[in-house]
Length: 202
Image (cartoon, rainbow, N blue to C red; front, side, top):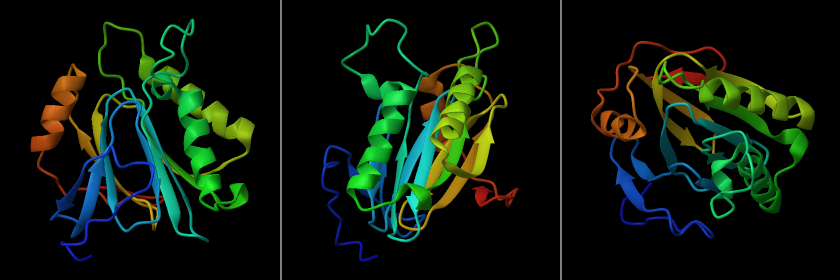
């Protein structure tokens, strides 16, 4: 991609775009409560602890998207101002946007990442997130083609929505989301694994 021609993604202009020399393309980062859908040849990145990201693409039209949710659901609707932090709303928004872009449900391919157990002294939010997304995929009869879930480590993701390629870098267990972000920014990518099921560990 031409570095001078930063793409404009309609509806997601609030997500900052920057050149990613490592990938030779423009990229944008999403955090808790964000999602993005596009056919542009960009990379979408995020960092996960106990959170989940679902990467979906439709190879027939070249559209894909990724979300990042924090909890399965709100206990009492007390957080209505940030509904995308919760799994059900995050999934509905992502899939609805893909449909608006011309994707078909029977063509959607899913890759699901995250749900790590980050703090031993607290409830296992990661496990609850995994249980939610596995049940959601089963209920909606969606096509899961790859996953990297659980464990006691954080993850850094790089998703290429136009092709469905997904890279995952596992980061040693740390205690807070702030530390997760800081470590991810400075982590050295290590080419240790090449996966099964089209999720590449880097």
